[in-house]
Length: 112
Image (cartoon, rainbow, N blue to C red):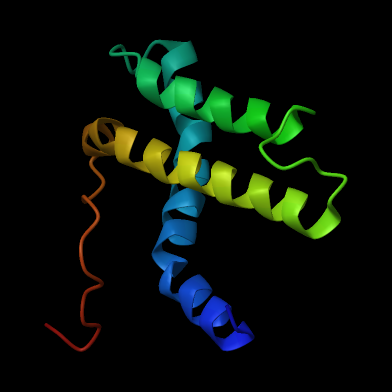
């Protein structure tokens, strides 16, 4: 696979990176609200996905060993990003509880 094809595939998956970032930004307030008791339906799936991503990242056992410098790190990046994307989906109920708008198409800033 050529370099151009890899770049095309990488930039075609930017939404996954955005979902992973959104999940990380929501995770801290979620944990704060669950611990304080303000949010009672504990989202076990979301917490499990977050724990799984962290464990995979720090675990010495990987699909591709980190000794293979490029591929080992790429393996971690792909798996953890995928898990964080799933985590973002699992946080939908919490976001509704907080009054945040569900993910949708970006709005047109010129619209009234």
